[in-house]
Image (cartoon, rainbow, N blue to C red):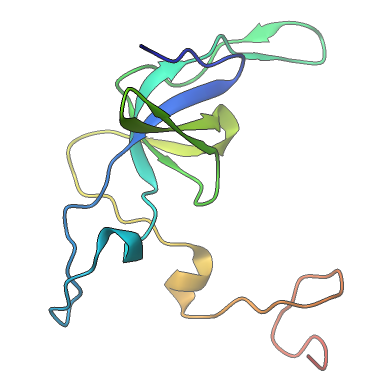
Length: 130
């Protein structure tokens, strides 16, 4: 059994990290590990239709190693294998070569923690009393 994505969707097989141990030597169970942000493209849809009605071909192809946004897509299981179906626009880039990829969100990279607020604006340091 296979899965064929429609339109601008892409089927990605997540690449799980083999490393399951912290720097301090603590062994992490599968449930505590970060969700993968890298995967191998398994299948690609036909593309996206623009406002003019023209079909735009996808930029990725089966076999590409890609990096995608953290909370993108829908997880599916086909024939006991886990896949992720995402929009092509959620793919951040194609990895070329065999090097190791390390993906972090902006808050992880800067060491800041995102706060939850009940009003609509982006928070910078000192922007309001929260």
